[in-house]
Image (tube, rainbow, N blue to C red; front, side, top):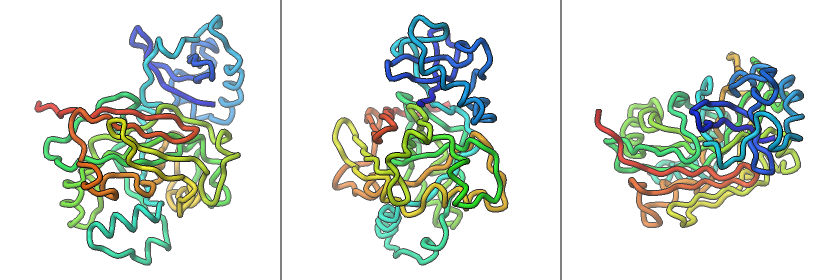
Length: 310
């Protein structure tokens, strides 16, 4: 199933299911209120709610709470997640990013999956504009996969972790590389360089949709990024070094994970301008259109704009 959050013509925001027929089912309206209005609330009882929502797949345009896709606006499927951790799980990206800073790989990276917390209040959705921070001259995209937690748990083992995953979506971890480079000299990791925006969407695919694509520690799904229609990045999620199960085990060690938290994979190899180099493509500028496409997960498209002075 593909879960979306959308805005109706009257401005009302609802969550629901996107059908193969390009129909969107408002799960609250279509069930006379039996299912929640918002996906964040749906996730609180995701196992039971998934059973109830499965019948929505049979709905047609003649059923209540059903809208043609072109009559609604898709927004971020989880507009305000409970938290957002981003990992550093693709070896090729880590090696290349460090080499570009004159650094070698460190053995600790192979010992534990590491992450940082980013701004869960800065989430953007499909077709949203991304303001380029005023102080930023090196704006970059990052091609990633995210998983959404669907069940509460603590000290979760990697062997058990799959049962805590609700689904997956595309994630673009926008990066102000010049701000990031400056602040990381202090030794606290990226913060302001990542603070302004993260895009997810266009929908969240339930984990069962990817089961048949399982390969190595990830999934055999292609990952691509285009800027202004030109293909820049190509990778495959199966090349990931740490699985989402490994990440969940690390994130939940001594900590309770809650439904509605997001975990990012980190950037796939070649999945950003930092890796490719500015001889391949300049840093992003207002007017640029960035499209991330991942097999089974859709296309996430955003346009860069000037930030406002307030």
